[in-house]
Length: 393
Image 1 (spheres, rainbow, N blue to C red):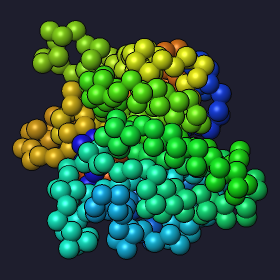
Image 2 (image 1 turned 135 degrees about the vertical axis):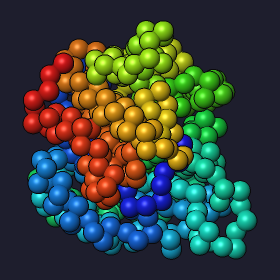
Image 3 (image 1 turned 180 degrees about the vertical axis):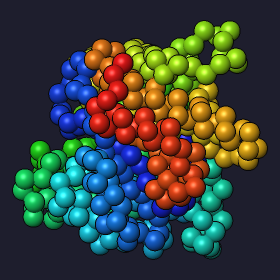
């Protein structure tokens, strides 16, 4: 996704028993449906109502995504970010109702009200992937990751039977990884030391959510120096899990001559996702980075959705459409969800442990949770059928 709407965001996480550190690439058990909550400066004040709705639907997991404005080089404006007590109360509430928790911090371009004295180009950046943040800078290392770990130490100490929590060390920070992989390796070492100091070994799993560009060789790994690729391989090898924002072409498995004349079938969407996963493992992780299959952490789809670009370009989210185009796009969105659930139900060819539906904003909020008028019933029906175990490949 090239840019996130700065709004209260709500994601749906399709999760299996998600936190096994095993490195085998064999198919995971059939994923279950969970959910995620994202907040900007206004915080997580309505999280209890959201959590109740998730639980009522049968979701198993919630991923909290606090958004922090990146206002200058290695500087984060925490005064325009969710308050830590609000996030902690939301995490506690999720754990208390038996939901498994993921914390996935985001850096976002600052709004005009954030640090108005700053004239940095970062204000105009369309997407966090262009940011140059050093993950070992104090604001990020201690202000984001360190405080997240301390929050979790309090939450989990009071709940000894809670499932392990997954903490994403980074989310879609493409350029930061491409040009600073050694610093991410250092952050992982620092986070592991802090995790051990806080008594969180086995209770907090360290992960990284990569952007879909990571699946395209020329977008990330071919821009990296040989030493950078080696550092990135070591970083991935040391993680407990990895995730992808999966916005690749969902028509990729169709005959080329038919792509402009019909929608792909749900099975063809599933085949496209299988193809993207296989190529990511083989071309990026194994060939480009030199990882052995046994060294690759469990893989998850960190985000999934279909925007105005349709199934061909699902990461495109902005642009006005005519009423006729909206109707046609709704069919594509529903087909995308049908194909995703078909893919997740596969017993062979799929190793991902979970998938996250981006469900905020028009075309993504298919359940109509935040915007009832934006609901796409056919897409939501596919997801609910999957939840109920009624869909099969």
